[in-house]
Amino acid sequence: MMGFMTGEETRTTVSPSIPAQVQAEAQTPIRSSAQDADLHTPPTRAWMTRLVIAGIVLTALNLRPAITSLGALLEEVRDGLGMSGSVAGLLTSVPPLCFAVFGVMAPRLARRFGPAAVVCAGMLAIGTGLVLRPFVGGTAGFLVASALALMGIAVSNVLMPVIVKRWFPDRVGTMTGLYSMALALGTAAAAAVTVPMTRALGGNWQTGLAVWAALAAVAVLPWIPLVRAKGTPLSTEAAPGGAVSAPAPSTSSGARQEAAPLRITRSRTAWALAVFFGLQATAAYITMGWMAQIFRDAGVPAGTAGLLLAVTMVMGVPLAFVIPRLATRLPHQGPIVVALGLCGFAGYAGLYLAPAAGAWAWALLLGIANCAFPLALTMVGMRARTGAGVVQLSAFAQSTGYLISIPGPLLVGVLYQHSGGWGLPIALMAGLMVPQIVVGVLAGRDRTVEDEAAAR
Image 1: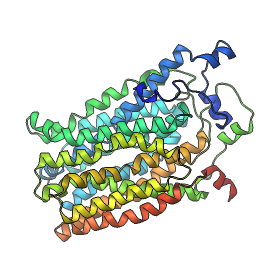
Image 2: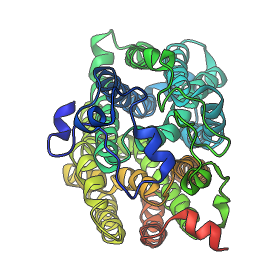
Image 3: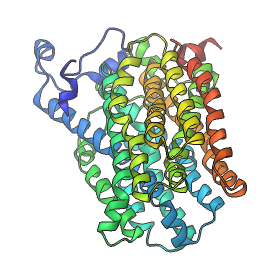
Image 4: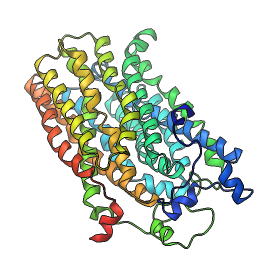
């Protein structure tokens, strides 16, 4: 995993532009001397850094299989539980609803227990929910168990950018890319493997969904020693404003600013980023929940439809590493927003005109368009100057964004059932790309939410 950083620093250093509180967080808790601090990283710190990277990657792998594995088997689940199209649309709207509701809790939980403990508990919730939901019986039980897994995903979603900013303040682009790439890999793997794995396990859709709990169980392991370790940026209790307490008290103005509460709703950039996040999430969850069904209704076999969904998701593996690094090198991320939006338009047009004939091309184009997600995560880290700002902006943008995205998958299900085809749903998807591009360009401007909140 460390190979991704061969072109950059292999230890955490502190840039003069990083505020004093973040600098304090980036320092090793114990140093033999000032000279030793400049020359090398103590072995304990190096080991902890590798453990954090492993935890980030394994967590990211678990943040979407609960959703894409269901998308691949949605028809079987609908038949098994007796769902209508509208109820299935409600089921595909549950993820953003849970992300919006439970994501708000993440900063408060992180201040109380530490980010590592919250993410560790989140992985446990994911594993428990995935084991239970296929076997509890009935649609209501399926939804409740799904909500438990999605609660774990929600808090981890919010805290991943926070962990990256605190532990790797000078490598936000690289680490966000690594995290996003792992997330895309987990998303694609669940879409591609679930159908053939279900067949190999006897054709029971319940077993095919439950098996993904094993991946969540593995992700718990690296967080356990991080929870037990004291004095690290992941285990130290955060200050009231959402910042982690430094090992030693600081009286600088930067530290006071870090701990001060931020009125995030006064920032236009925060609102633009929240809406951008919501619209890209709408497109992503419509794709994960319905794209395989669109291809199956066009005559594509179920296994191939799952592979097409996997292709769409796997496009995020290389691009999720490239886009954040590119974004951090540009003063304005608007051009990337526009390029991704145009790919979305082309993919939806093809899906409308020739869904089966050009299926692989449309899957590729929509996969590129879905890379607005790692771009949004990167902008969360770039649009806030302080650690406290990243905590609040991440929670606000993701919770508000997921709240915005709730109606999309449900509306697609309703339109599909009542129109008898995919014309209107695809037109809706394409139409939503216009406001996504507009607010994405606004969110990509070079400014910080702290400056905007203070100026109003």
